[in-house]
Image 1 (cartoon, rainbow over the protein chains, first blue to last red):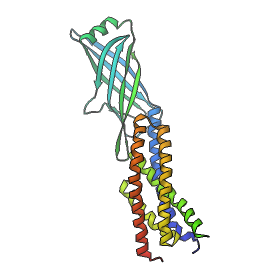
Image 2: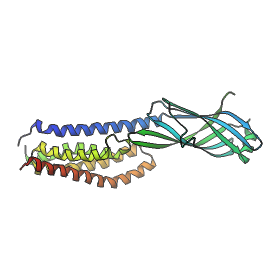
Image 3: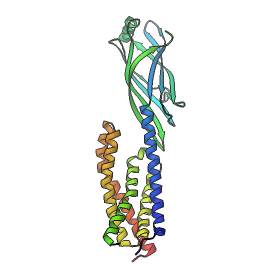
Length: 165
Length: 126
């Protein structure tokens, strides 16, 4: 039997449909990895108030990526705070209803409260003027692609800048 | 063209879309087509390959050999992709997918054979 192009058309169409499907998936995979790779997180101290039992800090969480990602949001941040070498404890920020905020365009910004009590407060008050505030921890980022909510955990680390000083 | 060359050539052609299907399942968190549609397309691919070679026996052979070639290529491609871009959890997941792809590939293959058989029934090739 001889080769005929007419009979292979059906096969070629299916092969092309499968190729297009795979190409879309690879593009989605690629956009997620470039989004996470280009993401820079910045945390700064907006203000703080001291009372007899605790220190209430208001911190600004900022994320900025080099590319846009559809349906990206932050569901939680876990912070290990330090001032100089003194421990300021472990703080978990979950926001309202398991979500801190969504990315608007390429950026994400939110102001959250952190409460320091006991020895954390003591460490904060003795070292606040001289030592830089450091943080390390994780940021939990979700992206929506297809019918899935993909959760990525990103390690973050840095110095908390002080706004207006 | 001699029959052996024809089978080998068509197997290589068949293995390409079959590999696309397997890689689609590997990247299923980013899925565009749902999985059931991929299985349906696998059946249609088995149907189409019998039409393309216009012989049921050759079509069935092509399906087996093509599926085997695609699965071997999948092992290679899947490991390269995940070990280049993957972190430790995804590397561990590679080992899981390596074993589960055997199940996935056989399901896809079984549906492709079903497509072959439907082609045999519908078109009645010798």
